[in-house]
Length: 114
Length: 113
Image (cartoon, rainbow over all chains, first blue to last red; front, side, top):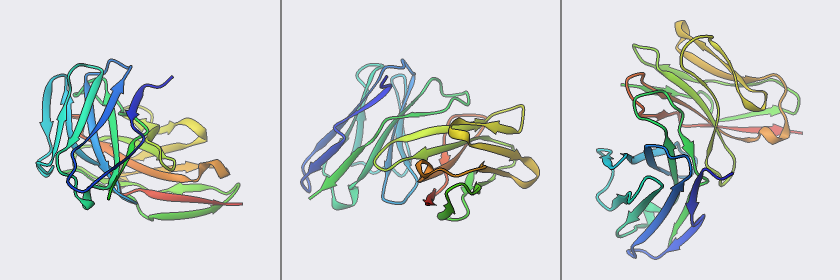
């Protein structure tokens, strides 16, 4: 049973062409996260939503935006992708924010920028 | 501030041999501790976690980890490696005041037949 779903699994975009990655969850979790993971590196948190409350990491570039229209869906928008934005993008969820609940990860979207 | 150190970015073991992946954290207060596994082109899957209670934690796929406060460590072990264990392993910590995750840089496990 898929719990955190990411579409598409592979995305190719052109330099400077806006792209949107999608994440949905069937867990009804309050918190949704977006991570960027470059080759052979640890996932890097970009931002997270607690319900509708958006929390941006201090070093996340302005080029990255996110939307959460409802509990189930969350989108990552890259306004003008650069070659350095090529990476795996992971969506994750957790039940609450102030408890040690583990994060549930989706399979990721691998973004290629040409 | 939290930090996580995984010693050894690459570990190779023979099939059937002991697996030991090291994780140390820095924190004045013991955080919550996690191990995740990532197979190629996949997301992260939780192997096990420590929050409170028994310091030896058993996870999925025969893995276990022991929280040692005196050593600020949470090393991952498996008595007998299987070919299917070949993957990237990430240690993560979360302060017990919030759910920010801090990931280590990962250890790539190779299992030699």
